[in-house]
Image 1: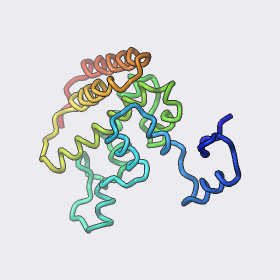
Image 2: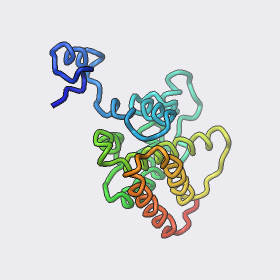
Image 3: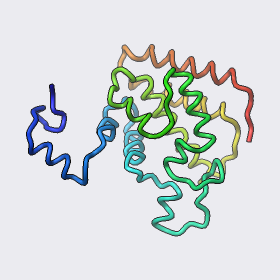
Length: 198
């Protein structure tokens, strides 16, 4: 067994105390972010999401009073949890990704982050879910800062597919086929959808 909280891999009470004493216990999935096969800027984005430090409207409202704190996709209050998991739009995206991957995910951050701990087993899953989170954030920012207009769910799913395909180069050779297969499944789900407009 290897103790991952010490550089030499050996357990010591000092290393345990350091983990427990540093602002409480650090969630294990936060450390696992850095081993994902995704671009560094997305590592940083996921780290900010895990720490609830993304500049969503509820966090911005703490810094400076905002007139409108509602979600750009619906009319509820925008928080990181709402934007990525509770919003009607997000739930629809996660339902389709869950169907593609054959795993029920997207209920909350922990359901996505739990797979990061077994990155070798869930490499394709982790890239697709990271691409989904990143694409939702990019779309939200386009709505907010570039006055983008709503098209349909298929466009967002295709954005997730193209983002994950761009990250294919970061995959080890043995995992590229699995990721390509999962992305093909997601494309099939997209083509099967009727056009949903809003």
